Image (cartoon, rainbow, N blue to C red; front, side):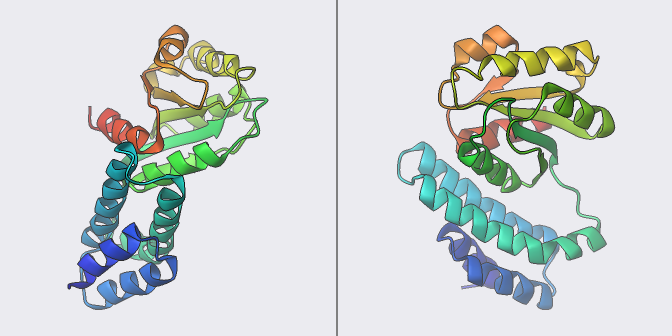
Amino acid sequence: MSVLEELREKTIKGKRKETGPLVQQALDEGLDPQDILNAMIDAMSIIGERFTKGEAFVPEMLVAARAMTAGTDVLKPAMIEGGTEPLGYAVIGTVQGDMHDIGKNLVRMMLEGKGIEITDLGVDVAPEAFVEHVQSHPECKIVCLSALLTTTMPNIGTTIQALVDAGVRDNVKVMVGGAPVTQDFADEVGADAYTEDAGSAAEKAAELLAA
């Protein structure tokens, strides 16, 4: 088994303590940082597909994502040195009034697993904070909004309206999600995309960036 094949398998299995050393081994062998990254992206795509099919669950996705994070931490200096470009840029946060972050964190890690550079604004994020980030980061093309309570869902619409009022809505695609969120709600507030789970969110984000 090649080092990249082993890295892919260890990432899928969530072997966080082993992915970093395998990335370093691959770098020491002179492998291209992009090929190393692609091995981990492939692993996250596989675990994401399994999750969508009901063959894997949140704990498996979390440990796989953490394993990839451990690998990318080792890989990042080589990627920067080599000028490797991310697939695109995004920002994510749980909307104002909502303190839930497990789903949001999972989506963030799955997007990172697609090679997307993403800034996490955290929880209870005011609409103005999303606007300020988009204004100060013109490379940001996706805004991911999460709400886990029916009482905070309206703040998704408030945030989207704030982007409109600031004149930056057309610069980004808005993705929404969370337990109470539906496609009908997403259509109602003018979001560009709604997905039911983290794996689907990562696939959709990659699709939006490629469009």
